[in-house]
Image 1 (tube, rainbow, N blue to C red):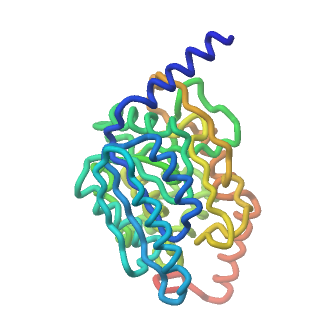
Image 2 (image 1 turned 45 degrees about the vertical axis):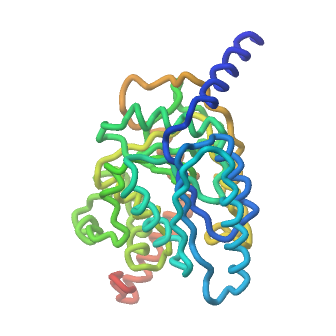
Image 3 (image 1 turned 90 degrees about the horizontal axis):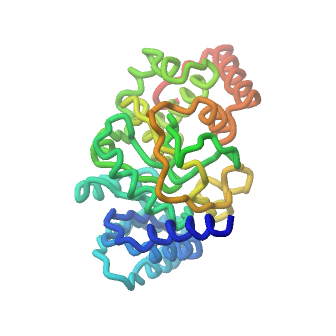
Length: 330
């Protein structure tokens, strides 16, 4: 047992010390404490090219000027041989527009990239995992992204290193220009998608389809300042699958009063422990979605249990009783 463990450790160590050629994108804002933790892992990986995307302080939050400056000072501490490209906004674009405009800029320069935000701490093996699979599926149109996050709460869904999912987790991920070119922040196809019952055909569950219809409708109506719901829709419109590691490679430490979306530690997927990925990777012999894992993800990560379904149903009943038809601007 000890000899096998040493052998595995040597394989992982070898992967970490290979030259990392894949560009890394680091998106920051105003949290120097979490920025420093993520940046330290990036420093260990020593990518040859680093894209830095930063949002500016909000006008009504004068304290953010100093916080944004402190976060930017951390990423200025690149002490390895690396080409650094910066896209810093002096005004606040918001977490939706800042991320997608920054990634538009990234994919004007490169064909593929590994992407991290300032509250997503990866295991060091996250980088070779992404780099290996970016190459493995570079020209496979079925695959739209590679995720570092696993929300199965310890359940192992496969004997291989990863499985395929319809969900594109964005807490540490990677993708190609060939997919990002389809991204549409304004969701111009949403009305057509909604009217053709597309989600029911994709999700094969009326309750889940209603849940995502509600999410996309709110996002389309600009009630949610977000970018990743649009990314989910983009991948579904391309009939794409995401790669999910069989262990969790990224931990989100972004809950709390200083967070934009997660103010309280109520989400089960926050602060999950990270594990090492073993190398060489064991590739699945076929590209088939793991239905059991996806059903679990829907319940746990997106909280679409019976209570959520009841809330959606009740809301629709109330709107119908009041004669309110949801539409753009509602």
